[in-house]
Image (cartoon, rainbow over all chains, first blue to last red; front, side, top):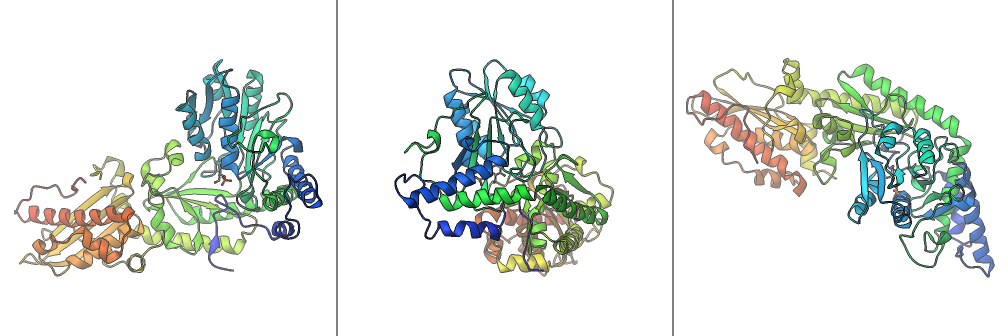
Length: 404
Length: 139
Ligand SMILES: Cc1ncc(COP(=O)(O)O)c(C=O)c1O
C-alpha cells in the first residue's frame, strides 16, 4: 500500500492510464486544429473529436450533435444557465434552482438575479434532496428554466431527476442538470429523464482536467443558448474557441471506460464505501451520516464526528487525503453552506469529513483509513472540552457560549 | 494549507492536556469560544499560596492551530505569577507558532482563555474581577 492514500474522488480523479495512452498522440504528431478544414492534420483532429462526442453522447442516451465541448462543468453550467436565460428572456424571467447546488450553478444564478431575473432557491430536506412537488409549487408562467443537480458533490444525495424532468416537460419549462458527479458513473438517459441540458466534466471520470461537455437538446424542443464566449462560432455558435483536442479525446475515452464497467464499478465502490461506513460506525459512538441514507452516489461518505473539529481531525490522518465541511479549511471561516442547508448545527458542520473513493481504492486502504480515523477521533475527543462536558451530562445546547 | 513545524509538534504532542478540579479554590477555569464558531478552549490554572501558577491544563475543540495555541499557552503560563501571565499577548503566540493571518483568531482565543482562567481564579480568591468563570471576552 502506497501512502498518502487518496480519498477525495469527488474533488477530482486521477487520469486512468488507458485514457492517458489515448491522449498522447494528440500532443505529438496528431496536433492538428480540429477546425482546419483543408488538410490531413485538421481532419485527423476533427475525426478524434467526433469520436469523443459520440462516446460522451452515448453515456447519456443523446446524439453526438447535441454535445458541446467546454473547459469543464463550471463553463457548461454558465453556458446553460446564462445562455438559456438570455436566449429566452422574452418568454419569462424566472429560474428555479436550490440552495445546495455547486457554486458553478449558484453564482451564475445570482449574477442573473442582479440582471433582471428572478431566481427561486428551493430549500432541501434534511437529506439534501429537492422534491418535484417543490418545483411544481415554485413554477409560474414566467419560469423559463429549472436547474437541479443530479448527485451532490458534498453529501452525495441523488435528486429525483426523472420526476422533475417529467414535470418540466408537462409545463414546457427547460430543465438543466449538473451531472458532474454522476455522468458516465450512474445510468442517465436524457430522453427518459426529460433533461434538456446537462453539464459534465472530464476530471471526475478519470479523464483530464480542463475539459467538459454540455448536452443541449436538439429535438422536442430544440434548445438554444446565447454564447458566453464570443469568437469564431465553433460548437454550433454556443462556445467559440479552438478545441482542446487531447483533452476531448481523453474525456471521450474516460466516458467510454466508465460506461463499459458501470454496473461493476457501482457494485465495487458501494462495497468499499459500506466497509468504510460500517468500520467507522461500529467503533465510534456519536457519529452521523450526512446526506441521504440510500439515495446517494455510491462513492461518497460524509460523516460528522461529534465533539471533534474537522480540520484538526484531518491533521490526525494527514496521510489520507479527504475534505472537510469545516470552516477552517476555507478562507471564509464559514462552515459548509451545504451542510447548513441540511439543517445541521454549526457544530456538526464543523465536525464533518467527506470521504470519497473510486476506481483505484483498495480494501487495504479502507481498512487502514478506518484504523487511522478511529484513533484520531478517540485522541481528539480526549482533548475536547465539548466531549468532556457531554460526558459530565451537560446538554451542550443549553450552554451560554461567548460567541467571538 | 501547510502547518508550521511547531503547530504540528504541539498537535502531535500536546502539552498539558487534561483537567484540574474546577471546584478547587486554587484553580481558575476559563472557557472561551463557541462550537458554532468551530473552536472552544478550556484552559485551567492552579496557583500556589503566592499566586504563582504551578500547573496548567487545557482541552480544545478546534483546528490544529487552536490546539497548538492553547497547548503553548499552558506551557507559557506555568511558573509565572498571574499578573505576569496576563502580559502574554496573542501576537507572541502568532510569532512563536508562525500562524498565518486566517489563524490569528486562534491566538486571540488562547489569550482570552488565559484571561478568563485568571479572572475565575481571582474571583474565587475574593480579589473579585467580577467575571463569570465561563465568560469569554467578546472579540
Ligand atoms: C456538482 C459539480 N458541479 C460543477 C463542478 C465544477 O466542475 P469543473 O471543475 O469541471 O469546472 C464540480 C466539481 O468541482 C461539481 O462537483
